[in-house]
Image (cartoon, rainbow, N blue to C red; front, side, top):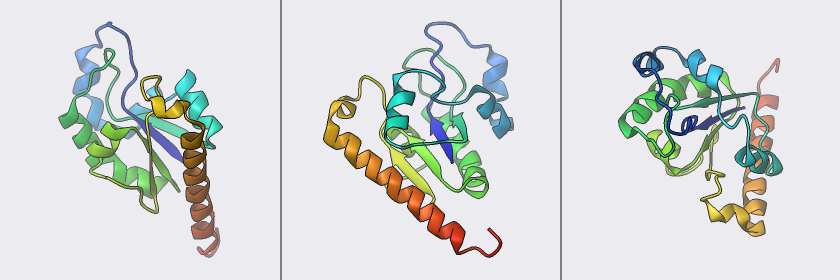
Length: 153
């Protein structure tokens, strides 16, 4: 499973232009940075049963709140097919990531989950946590059933 977020927040520091210039050239570069490596968002996802082996961000590191919708769309168009091919399940975290991937609902290979930041008050609702936990469980079960149907897996 791969977890895909927006971008690493680097506060108000500037990110070297070379990072932006080379961002779309390698999907391995995204995983060097990784998504949800620390913090309460990571803890919330884990409490809901999300267990990922790899993670990535659509955008290079940037200042708090920064979002380049065009670059995110290009990254999603380039990398999502690779991730779907390489991983049993792709978890897209947040509305902006889902919009960049042009998805409005989960599919059998891609699960959409709300962003677990402190700004998203849904994560304070126990019923919401239960719904996300059930969606994650159902997606993981679906992956297991699909894998059992493939000879030699």
